[in-house]
Length: 297
Image 1 (cartoon, rainbow, N blue to C red):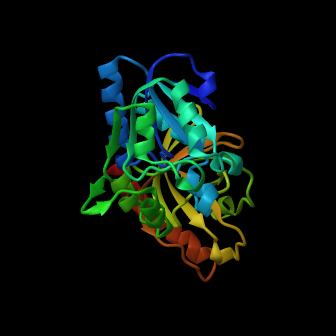
Image 2 (image 1 turned 90 degrees about the vertical axis):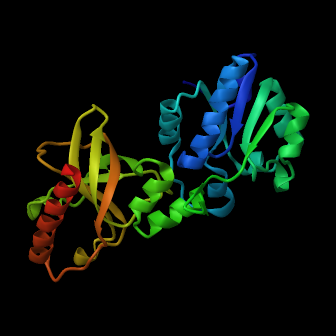
Image 3 (image 1 turned 45 degrees about the vertical axis):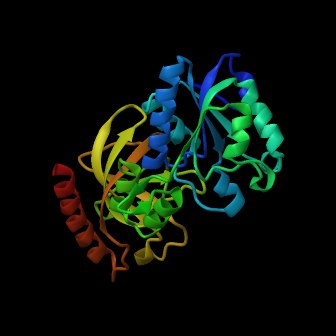
């Protein structure tokens, strides 16, 4: 998949374009991508996703994001998209009049444009689906995708994750929720009680579920492990910052500086404050047993 940061960077060819933030690339987004690919096959032109980094609501509403740009690009590549244009979404870009956005689209010579029915663009959200038809008559406007009678939206997934409900998030994503982080040095408390952990640093603003989870982990070298993760404030040791720590089953070694991809398979429990390290150690043993059972199933 080819990636660009501006429409002006791509070759001068006809296209079919899907436009949106695609934060999380959930089931609703996947329906858009399916339409995009179908239209691209019909017209025999490249399928192009025109997206924004960060997602628009991160800038306009200060919400957390579900996908970093590398995570989003990995997912779009997985779903077979030919090209992605990830435009930096800055206050200056958000303030552009709708006519400038339409001018950008014209340079990509779209044979068809695919969007959700709630798509708006330009300063003050002045542009709508009707305006898109000035650029391209073939505009596919999809209604909100639903599951169980409720709309599938990134906002809803964020709310589920905030409550630690990774099962609910998985249903709307169509896959387990994932986070990528670099292993950094922590206070090494885990190894003193027999449960060493990799302390992961993720980009600021990445949505993380709170609690203890069974996880699957992949290193940037392709190594794979089962494990358990804790995301929270570590009240037993009076922690003062949110930590994302992963214990890898049957692993010994040094992972500092490596990037790990963590897939949240199931929530085991919420974060708890224990009377001391002995009680914490005993609970971690029970957590590991539960996580192994989940992953084995």
